Amino acid sequence: MKNIILYTDGACSGNPGKGGWGAILFYGDHKKELSGGEQATTNNRMELTAVIKGLEALKEPCIVDVYSDSAYVVNAFLLGWVENWQNNGWKTTKGKVLNIDLWQKLLNLIGKHHISWHKVKGHSDNEYNNRCDALARSEIDKII
Image (cartoon, rainbow, N blue to C red):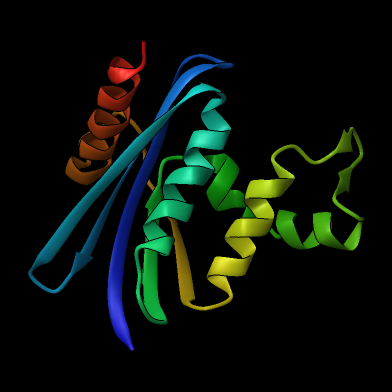
């Protein structure tokens, strides 16, 4: 299996508002940048979309280290939130889990790979997280 590093970030201008996402895939000496945006979305949806789009770009099962500044995304796996949500019919103590469509899409994708989740500090000195943020923000700027 190939070892892949995936950095991701999502951003929103207003929450909800115009949103963008960015992802960078690394495989050996190869690097691929991906980005996109949506007219009306939330920051959390963009964070999830960044990971989804990065994983969708993989053509075969891989060992993937995912780096994100989103506690929402990373902690959902590291702290077992997703498993609890599934066991509780996608409900929390406050009601229905938000973004179920994206969580389910992400779960389907990660089932194909061996994923390790890593939380990075956002808007700090992490070159690749900062680049993902710039990609996401540039997509917001493209939306009229």
